[in-house]
Image (cartoon, rainbow over all chains, first blue to last red; front, side, top):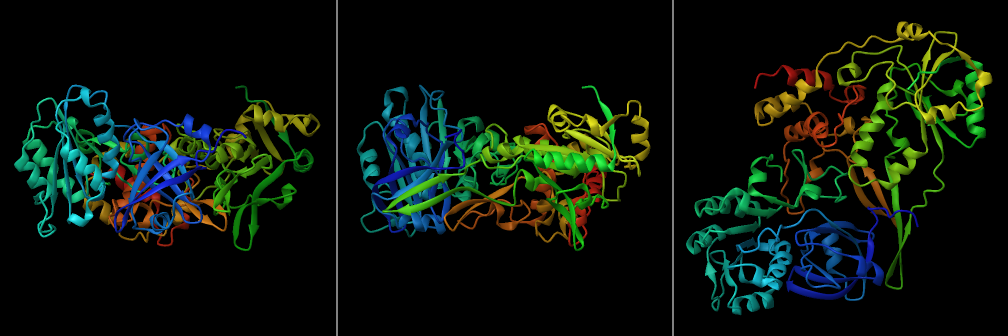
Length: 279
Length: 339
C-alpha cells in the first residue's frame, strides 16, 4: 500500500458501551488491527473523526487519557445523523477513526501549578482526558479543583467517576445544577457555573484554568476568572467548530487566520481575544 | 530558466496532439457545448475552442474533481471492509488551452490541499498533469490578473506557454522540465523563434492593474469589525456558492457517504450550512459574515498562512454570479474604504 490517505479511517472495534444519560453514551474503542493499536499515540486535548460507514463522520475530543493505554473513549450526545447512528451500535461492532488531530493541553508547562477545571453540560467529555491525565500524574500538580455544572441532575455524565473524584482528598469537586434542575436528594450546588465559581473563589496564584462549555457559560465565566486574577494566557479552552477533514484543508473550522483543527482545538483566552468570534 | 523560444504551426500542433495521445496521455481542452465552453477530453486541436476569454468552469476539476471517491466501504458479517482508492489508473493528462491565470491557480490549490500534510488524491493527479497554457489575446471587463501578480502572458504554473501569433501558428515557450518532456522528439514540428518575444508582447491583451493586494489585505484587516460595510457589500448575495464552484482556487470541501463510497465534494464558505453546528449554533450566521470570510480567506488569511493569494483574477465569480456581484468592484471598495 502506498502512503496512507489521511482521509481514510482505521477500523476500530467497540469494546464497551456506557449509557451516561438517556441521550449521552460513551464508547470504548480498540483498533481492529493490533499493530495499528500499538503504534497509536495521542496527547490530552487532541480529537478524532469517528465514522459510521454509510452515515458519515463526526468530531469529538478523545475522552480517555493517554495514560490509559490500549483503548480510547469518546462520549457524545445523540444530536445529529452520525451520533444517532453511533448510539445504535453495540459492543463488537466496527466504526472508523481518524486521528489524533490538533494540538494539546500543555500539561508539562503546568507542573507545580494548581489546576482549575470548569465544565458545563456535555463539555466535560472533552476535558475528561486532561483531568484523568493530571490525576494519573497527581504528584506533579498542586491543588486540583473541578467545577462541573449541568442543567439537571439527570444530565450528569460519568456519575461513577464523579463519585470517585468527590471522595478523593486530593481533588476538590464542585457539581452544580441550574436552579430547578435539582432533585430532593441533590447534595451539590444549585446555580449557574459563573455564580458558583464566584462563590468558590479559587486562588489564581500559580494556577491555570481550563474552561469548556456552551458559549453562554464561557461568556460569563471569563469575567469571573479575570476578577479572580487569572491572566488570559493562563485560561485554556477547547473550541468545537464544525469540521470535516480535521487536517486544515476543508476550510470549515477556519476562524480568522487560524484553523481550529490545526492551531487548536486548545486555545488560551489570550489567543481568543485576538481572533474573530467565529466559534 | 532559459526561455527556449520556438514556434509551431497548426498542422504541427495537430501532430503533437496525436503523439501525446499515442504516448498514453489524455488531453483536456476547452470545448464548446451549446452555449458553454468547458474543459473536456479532445482528440485534436480543432476540437478545442479558444475563442472565449474564459471557460465557464475553471480547470481545477482536473486535479480536484467536483465529486470524488475517497474510498469504498462494505459491511460483511458485522465487520466493515475498506477499499482504498487505486491511484495507479489515474490517466496522464495534458491540460491544453488553460489561461495563464488558471495555470497560476494550481499553485493556490496546492497551497491549501497540500498544506502541512499532502493530499493524496490531489497530489497524485497533479503529478500526472502537464499544463499547456495559451496566452490571452483578449480580455474582458471582469479580468484583473495583473492586480494579483499574474498577466495575460505570464508563465507561472505552466509547463508550456503558447501564444497565438495570428494565423501563423503559435509561439512556444518551454517553462519547465515537464514541458520539455512534452516536446521530447518533436523537434521536427518546431521552428526556432529566438528574438520573437516582442511578437508575443504585441499579441497580448491589455489588462490594467486596478489595485494592490497588499493594500487590500491591510484594508480588510482594519475593516473586519465594520458591520455596516459588510452588510452593504453583501446585501445582494444569495449565498448560492456559484462563485466558489467556478473559482480555480476555492478548495473547501464536504465529505459525504453514498452507496458504499465516501465522497469528497466541493463546498463553499458562502453556504449557511457550512459552519452550522449540530446544536444549532452557527459561528457565521449572517451572509455578510460569510462574504467577509470569502474575501478575508483569499486576500488576508491565505497570504498569511499559506504564503499564497487565493485569487488569480480570472473573473469567473463575477461572470457566474446570478445577482451580478463583481468581485473587482468589491475589492476596489475595500481598498478605498475609510474605516
